Amino acid sequence: MSLIRRPRPWHIGSLRQWHWISSALCLVGMLLFAATGITLNHAAIIPATPVVTELEAVLPAVMLDAIEIPITDKAPLSVELRGWLQTELGLYIPASLRGEWSEDDVYLALPRPGGDAWLSVDLASGHVIYERTTRGWIAYLNDLHKGRDTGMAWSLFIDGFAVACVVFCVSGLLLLQRHAGSRPTTWPMVVLGLVIPVILLILFVH
Image 1: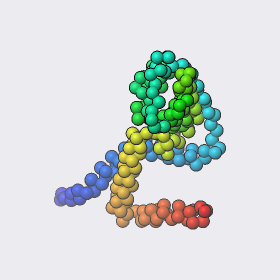
Image 2: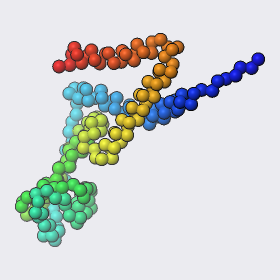
Image 3: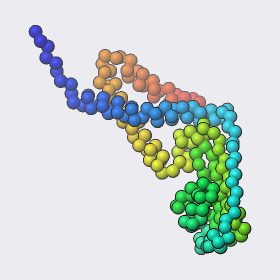
Image 4: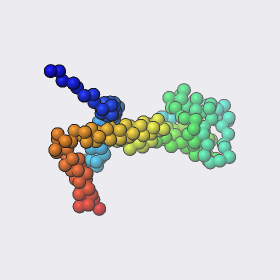
């Protein structure tokens, strides 16, 4: 006597697809965010030795004379000046980045993940100073976790990653519901995952 196999409901296969696809997309990101969650939580005891790099140069007289002080105190650098900085010092300055202008100099703050940087151009002498501070790979990864000074592309990635995590969790929850009948500890474990952080917040977080 042959057994007739009942077809699985279509949504079960779909749930599993959503679950494994979202888990594959989230895998590296979740490992990164979990690891940096630990390093951020213990940032005070993780040593970091800042490394400072300083570059100096002098603008050619022709280029210095061509600089026009803008009417507003915040304006981007000219195309020529940005091109010279990239050629001579290897510094890429985005066209959208606005410097702080005065009659004496122009100053650009150049924040970056895991460190900081700034650029100053003396409008009288043409003296250019660039200083970059880096605090190591752990600080860099911590700033990626926070989205600090990472730009629009990384911000969009974090948003997409968050959506993928939501899909991963919701599809996992629905799969748990599907198999909860044969696994009696399913819902107690889910409730425990909610109760533990709530208790910690009530008792220990002020």
